[in-house]
Image 1: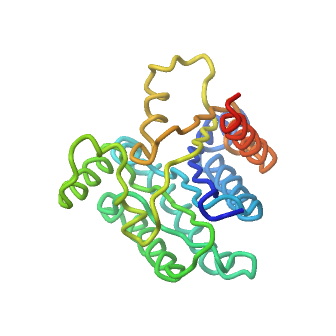
Image 2: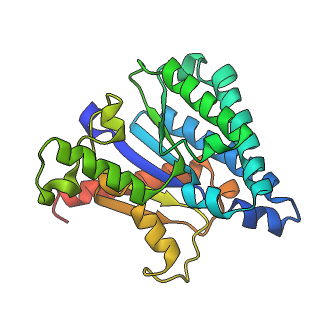
Length: 253
């Protein structure tokens, strides 16, 4: 498939704690299970060869600020060990040698915690190590706040003299600053979504803000499935349905 036709997919992996609670496990066990599921989705996306960018929202700025310190420290420990495994055992496997990793978000909140600083170090190590790769891009959104991302993007855009009415179609954000061409998000998948929630509730608004600057005709796909139970088969089906929808639209159906 031509480069211009490849997809930009966002993933909000929610429901780890609810999954663990239902099984009588600790919250960190739920996050561990969810992390393993996300890794399988990375591999599935790589193998499909039609995903250009897969952005996963791993830790919001609000999480860092509002959750108990002990819980956040546990998450940092899990992230650090996961990133170390990616660096040591995953990124340089033959099948992954074209995969690039970048970080979207801030680093200052993470840097206030000893384990958080190790997460930042791992992120920067892998980003530098994979900087020149040209295949699928994994964008990890950590210490991520949509409002901060929009403010930064707006400032960068205005520095280049862009008018207000072009702000929605920003084409010089964090991925472009890292040498990655702009493209709108095609699909945002959110696991662990309560189907009874209205479109105006906080969770839906939260979903709509994710990767806001890149959203131009984006499809949103909520799942009641909790992240540890979201499989590569679910992901493949989501992508197939998206491609079918795009085909139907091209045909004018």
